[in-house]
Image 1 (cartoon, rainbow over the protein chains, first blue to last red):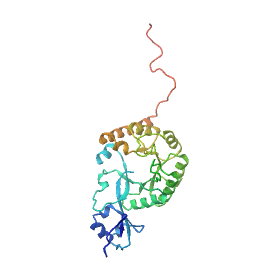
Image 2 (image 1 turned 30 degrees about the vertical axis):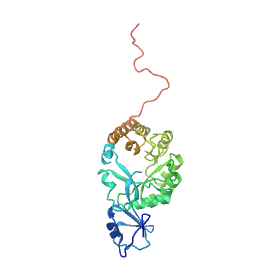
Image 3 (image 1 turned 135 degrees about the vertical axis):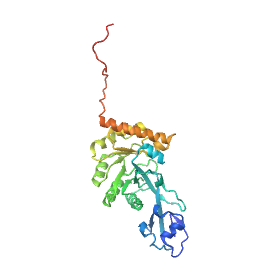
Image 4 (image 1 turned 90 degrees about the horizontal axis):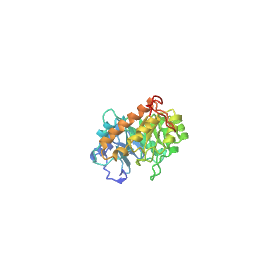
Length: 64
Length: 227
């Protein structure tokens, strides 16, 4: 699985929500794109990650 | 950061979107004071498509539907691409965003942005981070005169006097970062900016006096003491 441009270990039957918790991401503070499609926060618990998924996990930072 | 925003009197703070770090618990929103609205920007976008993508992602964070469209393909001068900015503005206005586009002060581009539904236009004063001031002042004046939208100078302002001048010209607001961030005393500089912006706005509303090429006496021309 690819997360933010890096190869990451994929665990079977992990939901996106669980993945975020396990890796120290705060679900309320991130926007997620999975294989080029935005996943709304309310669906994080519904998405089961697949081995060839490509995730972008983003959050706000200062600057413009 | 919170103190600086409070001292500045800012009502809007812009934030960018970047990849989150695993394990990183920092949340920039904790540093934005209550009552200050968030303006997510599309920093990083080099095309309209990338700007739209970033705006849609930012929308997921439930901070409202304001977006600053920022489309920059050149990394040396960081000048915005007006053509791509217009395209992104059209697309995002259609999706219900309130769009504040960052642009190079071109009258035709400004008209196109207004036609596209932009809520304001944000022409640059000088390149981002340069602290060079209102290099584009004459062209900002043209936009203030010709475009029926709030004009917000964004980028290049380096001193409070420049923010004051932008307001005297008739701009609705200014956006600044580097001028404050690179000051020796950031908290004090933020206060200086607030004072300058209020002064400039009052001067604009007061209607500034005329300029002469000659002199005109300020005291009476009669009743002089005989020598």
